[in-house]
Amino acid sequence: MKDWKVRYYKSDEGECPMQEFLDTLKEKDKKKIQTFIDYLQEQGIELKRPHTDYLRDGIHELRIQISTGQTRALYFFCFERNIIFTHAFIKRTNEVPDNEINRALIYKNEILTKYSKENIKEL
Image (tube, rainbow, N blue to C red; front, side, top):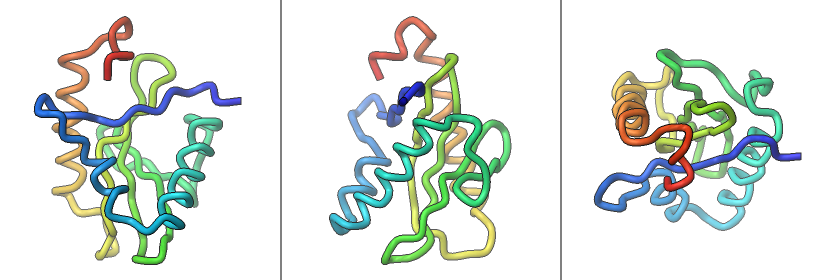
């Protein structure tokens, strides 16, 4: 049962970094990432390592190994049962780079400024 609603951040200009990342991948890698997203959607905050990890300031990472390397999809929880994916990238260092976390925080702040529990469905 999918109790959580998964949404992707979109800019005012209509850019969707998460979807743009997915569009660059092979079909089998997209399917694998979608499987992990579906699992997160079912488990929500109960899903832990090795599949997810908490980074900082409310930002989490979905950890997925695909053919091109370790992939991290950053997300946060908001307005009860919503999971908002900000963006994804191929991890090339031991730690998640601060600039990636900061990027997710910028997107998170935009979402929390523009949307409420009542209108998050518009995202």
